[in-house]
Image 1 (cartoon, helix red, strand yellow):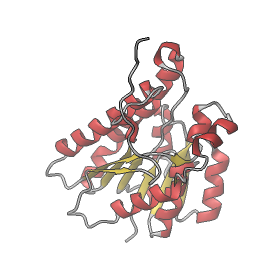
Image 2 (cartoon, one colour):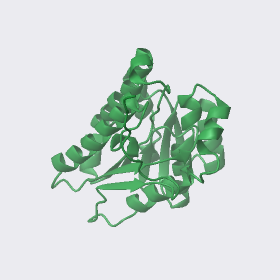
Image 3 (spheres, one colour):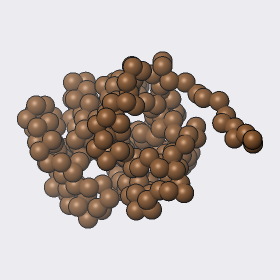
Length: 250
């Protein structure tokens, strides 16, 4: 019998690629997002019996609950939650950053993720389902201008591992995926639509693609139910860890 995955942030990037690959692997998919036209295009592409678009902002709990209450019968039993929706805003150091952007990142990357998880946990426990949280290498390795974005991803990492501990014995699998550089709309959003800056970030470095990460999500989800991938870190070959920075006097 086909299983059902709920993927947040399915209107672009990793979430959109994941919706396609999960459907190709035989899953039904509920894809959430704010852009109705993109979700409708996915429904047309993948078929309404395989993909259901749920239009809401993950920060809006009332809209989320209304969308879940309105799910078609075939999509009501959710076996997998992929917490993918998230964003980085701004490229300024902490002392120059916009506080409103910081708060938006926390509300989206932290509060909405934990709220969605809390909402679906009872059903996931009943169905012995799975949770995959998209974190980032930024949650592990500091870098200039990472500040609050990196902090939110560090939360996702620790929250995921604590979920794993709390759900011990319940049969629920919990995984964190920590991607490095992948060419999606991520940098466009972070730079407020600066195409030149986005192109420069990925120029000549052969980054990962949304499909690379989506294929990994499907692999994790389709493993036998007695296996759990606790955490998985992914980088393009061209990206590696840098050394410490040193400010010298004189």
